[in-house]
Length: 198
Image 1 (cartoon, rainbow, N blue to C red):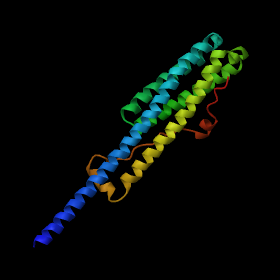
Image 2 (image 1 turned 45 degrees about the vertical axis):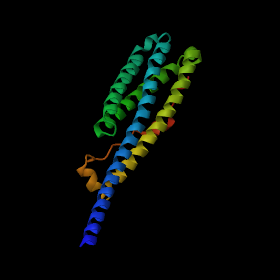
Image 3 (image 1 turned 120 degrees about the vertical axis):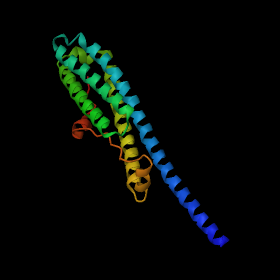
Image 4 (image 1 turned 30 degrees about the vertical axis):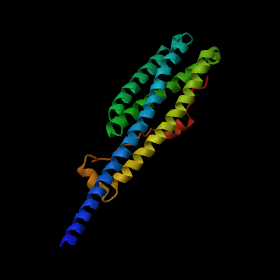
């Protein structure tokens, strides 16, 4: 009788340990994708901080192109708002979609600025513009790597959460939905980025 009780107690302890380990792994994976998003946030903020300098440098040369400069500034502000929403809820589908749409808008505005700058050889040769271009290019590369890292972490979390019996435990303990990837529209365009070449 005592051996049977010890066996049952041992099985219960193993079951509790198994449940706790699954829950802890879910928490760990969620923490990893949240940290990975924090890396994206750092790089996007750096990029957003460079854009006003880019606009200021271009202003003197592009006096007749104020519509383009305004579009870049507005797109930057929209992207910053999208980043704030995504930072509040990394992996949230609506927040990721808002950020991706804002980033797409900013990408288009920067391409428009690049086209305008091409028409001004003095601006293209400006030392400040060249330095900003290099910094923006490096930042774009960092954003791409950070986004890839985030998406990898989200994928690992989602796969683990969806596996059986993990899905049963996840649904009961606050991990009820998959995290969303940060996907970009028209990835072919972005493969050609960073094309802010001056």
